[in-house]
Image (cartoon, rainbow, N blue to C red):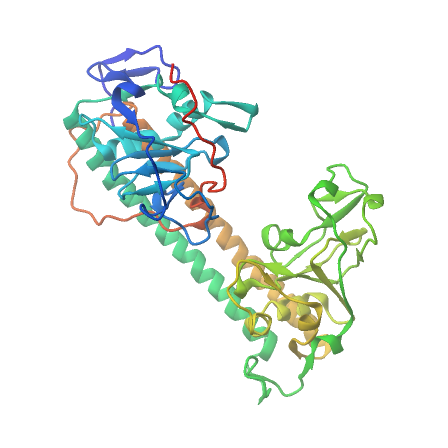
Length: 462
């Protein structure tokens, strides 16, 4: 794509040059601020996310704002004013309401709303917007309307705005399609990994085997030489960790530790060392873990993930925090960890649980899990096979994830370059294409802070 030939200096740091026929306009000349307070019963609550403005997400934090929300009308631009929600913004296609931490701007008629959606969601504007904010901490502050209103925006003629939107809709759809292909690859690889583990921990790794019915609906058929036992008869002990609060975590602490949330967020199947440390003297009744111990998360947000387990494969002293269930045993640690993470084990962990906001599992319930157990030598063989197989799958997943990140960067740069006049798309023909939206991604759909209801009406818009 070629650039414009008639570029001029702007004196504006985030858009140093613009095509000569474009204009620079301040935000308050292009928008009016909408500050109407409404109730979420009269106007449906909306979520302000990195994917744009959506109907309120199921997992979003709810509040008791009542009438203390802001009205949003279709076509309004909404942005979360807090810097820790950078990128959470967009033009709304819906009428609704948002929490007061958001700014709502209504564009004037000269603007194509989709052009505004692309322009104000590009990373260069995002950095400029939050640079104008203020707060106590550098990475957590707020940008108010009085601070953003004088930010200057590049505005091409309306016909050119329309062409930019057509071009970006096409290019973004192409990139979204490629991202979707990579996401499907990852899902297929994850499913292959899961099914291979499930098969190996019930029927082994050899093709010619004699099977028998285990008598347990979750487990199905197993090898003749295997037996089904309750986990509490396999384990030497099943106990709880000791409370380690957030305040107890110290970067240069004298002992490593693990807290239950890290089982979900930081580790897949196992770990040798932790990135979290504390001082031993801060922990009352410390619970030490040893090589091979299986750690279960005692609390979770999703029923089908409750009781996720990982194995400790390190040799240094380590503490288990509260709400972690620790199982010591004399079996092959890796095999047992694979078995307890299998679908048949997870079905038992989830059985009888309800889809509440927080789900708990007790040590006694962990002890009652039925496990298909082979002889120790076979456990080691299966664990070695799964380690090798899963490493290959994980490498392939990582490559696909890296390609997705590259595509996301390409999309971001393309949008930014076009809406800020770095490239000229006026004469590029737009072919027929299938419109492809961004793939749903929970990590990119983080909700605005509904509990934060700071009122901006008291500020002076000087």
